[in-house]
Image (tube, rainbow, N blue to C red; front, side, top):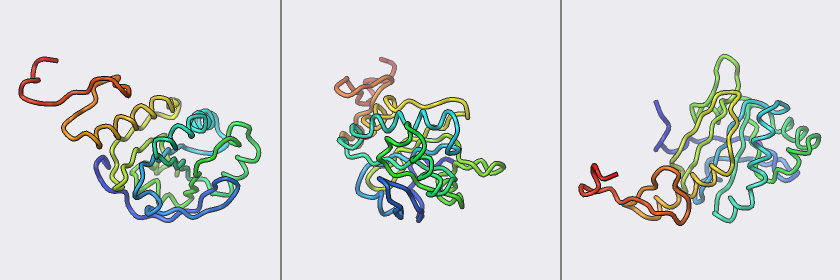
Amino acid sequence: MSVLNTKIKPFKAAAFKNGKFVDVTENDVLGKWAVFFFYPADFTFVCPTELGDVADHYAEFQKMGVEIFSVSTDTHFTHKAWHDTSDTIRKIKYTMIGDPTGTVTRNFENMREAEGLADRGTFIVDPQGVIQAVEITAEGIGRDAGDLLRKVKAAQYVAAHPGEVCPAKWNEGAETLKPSLDLVGKI
């Protein structure tokens, strides 16, 4: 069953953000755009490259009104230790959710049950708490924060312009499509 177009489920989790431990719930997501950026584990190989890439683009996400929540099944204590020891992770300013019970990961149907680890999954959530986009990649395939920005911009555009859709490779300012009978067979 796909979680696409479903409302996020209730959760409460401890997180590490800007040198502090904080609690995060589904209510912290409502009213703004959010990205849940799941990864398998701290102190690994592909994961820090992805998290660092998102950190490099965090200011741009913030300008778009988007909050980032990275999530792994590590604890918030482990996130702090990783943050304190890695130059790449040290630059992270967004919320790093610890999910040792797997509640958040399972809420997004993103758990590798046999391993107790999150899949490499990205979920774009609208201000109503509805999941608008899902991307899951295999263990060795890293994601690109630039493409994630593009997808969030497309989701925000479609939400703000009912009746329009964004075609492949759409970038902000490019033409969109208005699905209609007249357009059938013309693309």
